[in-house]
Length: 161
Ligand code: DAT
Ligand code: MG
Image (cartoon, rainbow, N blue to C red; front, side, top):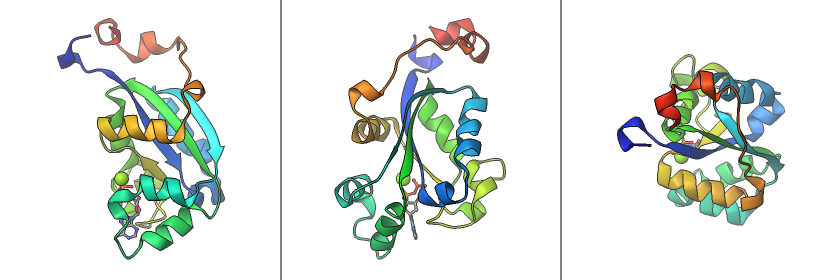
């Protein structure tokens, strides 16, 4: 597939403890399904301090890091790997900005959250980080390749490559 038509990518989404407690797993997952994305990895897991320090390394010196780590360990999370054409950027758009009460209506954070820290999901912010984060949360045998029949309706023939 030529570069100007975009490439198929994979990205990491975590459904955070606030969404688990509020019973939003189904609705959040449904948003990505309705968009036409392909789910290629899915599991519930508890995060230890080491993985959180790696995952939030860019925030480790912030005063809120301890409460962020505490929040992310307050229940298991649901880790998902989604695949699609330029999916990293598409999922960030669906996610909305960090401060949920200012996130665009129609985005997941815009529709389901009010907080900066309790903002229902994590989504990878670049193609480079997505590759690292999928590897951080999934073993290779937990990522599945399969044909999704609706792809012939989700993408035009030249986009499918
Ligand atoms: P995002 O999750 O939108 O990629 P980020 O990577 O800057 O945002 O931060 C990761 C998470 O850390 C974010 O979802 C919630 C928490 N966080 C960020 N900034 C915060 C702040 N100022 N106060 C409290 N929590 C914050
Ligand atoms: Mg981030």
